[in-house]
Amino acid sequence: MPKMKSHRGAAKRFKKTGRGKIVALGHAGKSHLLEKKDRRRKRRLRYKKVLRPGDAAQVKRLLPYL
Image (cartoon, rainbow, N blue to C red; front, side, top):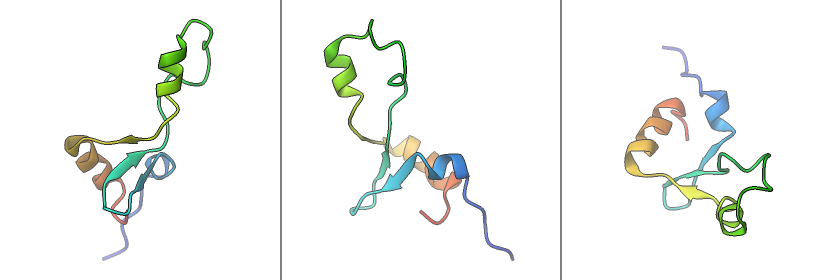
């Protein structure tokens, strides 16, 4: 059986932590129209986000070798 392919779009957006959790590297809504978003919201969008178990399962299907 041939090797499975990773979803290349997902591969650029997620990675695994040392403990095996899936992390989203960026947030939606941080690229433009930033004037109207308050400081606190923009600051929170900076950081990486650990995915919840249901979302992590979906990402694991897209990235079989992660």
